[in-house]
Length: 155
Image 1: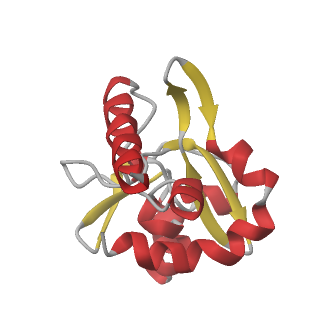
Image 2: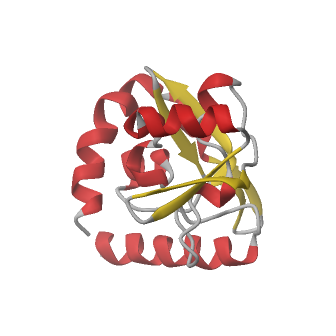
Image 3: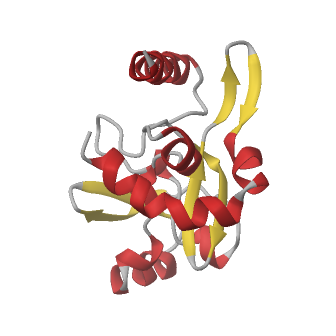
């Protein structure tokens, strides 16, 4: 029964994310990563910045856009440093619910030098920001998210 309700929750999140344009899959059907946001800017400017297709890097089959040649160069020099945890899925969804949820690229945190992205949008007619939930127990989630991702990634 628990597994069935989790499946329902995942399907519901998927349906909601299709309706809400702010929610994106980590890599879309066109292989664009993180909705075209510059993953380096989360670290260098501490903000979500839309990238430009002029500054594209293809990494592991996904296309990453950058806001500048400088950010593109930083990413090329060490992609792993800038890639979001959980392959870009909602970190709270992975750590708390053991599932892959879409993300809002403008809802993020950088903790211990790692980028975490979160769902932030309408859920069942109510606003729901998983970053708020993450911050309530961040220390716990930071110690469990990696092992949770190993399990979720196999699904």
